[in-house]
Amino acid sequence: MLYLLDTELKEKINISASLTQLFGVGNYKSTRLCKKLGFAENLKISDLNKNQKLKFIKGVENYSASVGFSLKQKLLLKRKMEIEIKSYKGLRRLKGYPVRGQRTRTNSKTAKKKLG
Image (cartoon, rainbow, N blue to C red; front, top):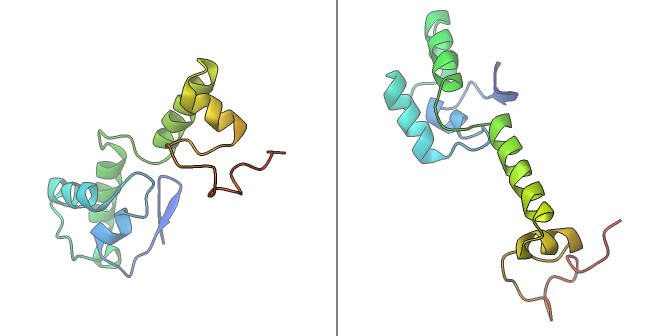
């Protein structure tokens, strides 16, 4: 098993597919990473030797885009800031209502229930 950024990557699937298990990495970013590191997308993690695995781990950790825990922290800080400045989205989050303009008259019965 290969652990990368607090995530266990499956070794039996392709590198590009296993990278999408990381938080914040989709298909596009995974293919870009594979090209940048010089690995074929259909190569499996189990087929890599130790030097290639080290290169793979260092390449993903040094990737410039925020991925994994750092991305989660940024999103959490953004939500806290919205609540602090009392923006519309922040107040909706605080009350537990839908944030992105969904209707609450007939839908979102679970979202309108009191929190806690």
